[in-house]
Amino acid sequence: MRELYCKIPKVDRFLQDRELLEILDGKPLFFLKKAVDSVLNNLRSRIAEGKVKDFSYEELKEEIKRELLSLLKPKLHRVINATGVVLHTNLGRAPISPSVADHLKEIITGYSNLEYDLEKGKRGLRYRNLEWVLKELTGAEDVCVVNNNAGAVLLVLSALAKGKEVVVSRGELIEIGGSFRIPDVMEQSGALLKEIGTTNKTHLWDYENAINENTALLMKVHTSNYRILGFTESVSTKELVNLGRRYGIPVYEDLGSGSFIDVTKLGLSYEPTVQDVLKSGVDVVSFSGDKLLGGAQAGIILGKRELLQKIKKHPLNRALRIDKMTLAVLETTLIYYLDESLALKELPVWKFLSQKPHEVEFKAKELIRILNREGFKGNAEIVKDRTEVGGGALPLQTLPTYCVKIEIEGLSASEIDRKMREFYPPVVGRIKEDAYLVDMFTVFETEIPLIAEHILKLET
Ligand SMILES: *Cc1c(COP(=O)(O)O)cnc(C)c1O
Image (cartoon, rainbow, N blue to C red; front, side, top):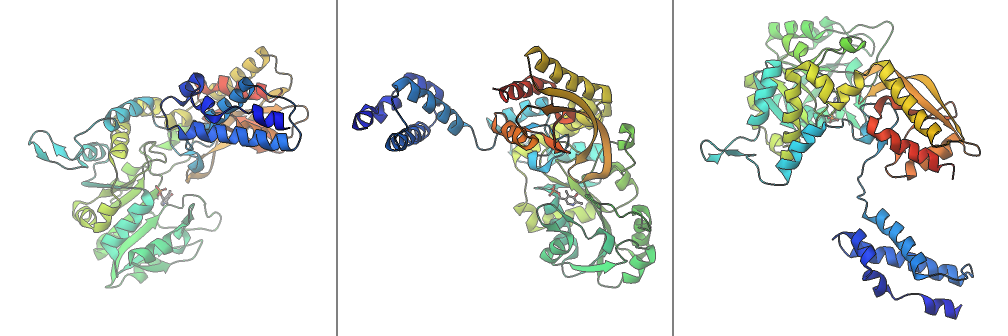
């Protein structure tokens, strides 16, 4: 045992090893020291337990290499989404288009005219680069953009209704993920919640009866992640707008996802677009930047100039300000909506949502073709299924998809699932009826060979 201990190479030898330093690639030596420590400590305890007969420098180096590679990988890293859910909040919601990413890289690796007016040679406005395209797309009089839609709701209520009443239907007092609840946000903003109607039915006269001299807003909230079905009634945006006009009270709609494209074109049932909502006359509307819009995390607020001025001047606007990365992504994403056919082609979210079933099936066949070519001995077969949009957009609506069911002798579905998440890049699939499924709906074509590689490794 003593002999084995003496044989352990000096730490410095590893720290000066050319090959290891090459892998380190200029990153802090901390990572290499940590990898060496971990491997050598492990070796010492295995020697103490009598589990090691012999070892070589090269063997240890191989172990250190593996450890180092895993330590060097950023903790936030890419994942292959094989869940089929396009706007998966846990997997980062909307992927952005490569052309948008190219522009982003240019903006953030140097300086930019973020708040600089190049014509005048002095301070300019941060949001002017976004305003033009949002106004062009929607006809909104004015624009404000903050950190996310939750922040947008808080800001709108704080700026327009602090100390006053906001009328909301009981059927719309939603909670969405991450403990965002309308009543709680309302309280935080200092606005007073005036609940009306019942869970399943709210009539126009419920709103009208609730109006008094202390009413600041009539609010409509998109019931993003659920639907009330059966014996129901709710008031349309248009009706609410007419009521608001009669009493001189502004109407605010939290649209949640907020789409610029009419989803009936994709075979889904009608959801009002941002343009529709503004056309119906609402005074203020807000929605997310990274749900169906397919851009960066943000909360976009559009509406009447007078109200937007109040919102923009509120101190919370500064606290919820977006940075240049968000601005760069949003501007270059939004321009595609000036030509809808380009948005459907260029923005990954819409590219996925507008896939034809045979295109998804083609990806499934491609995965199986590679597996067969490489001599996969397990069972891989195509399974037709349905998937959802996610991100609280279009609840209850599903789209047809094709999955590849993977079965391997001696491995349960949950074992396959766990192992697929351990590879790099990890594959997050789904389990249905005790079978492991790779849902091809959200898989990029370039990812298919990587998925195949991982599956083949499961057998060795
Ligand atoms: C998603 C959502 C929000 C929150 O939006 P984030 O951009 O995630 O902050 C607020 N309201 C509704 C109705 C939503 O669907």
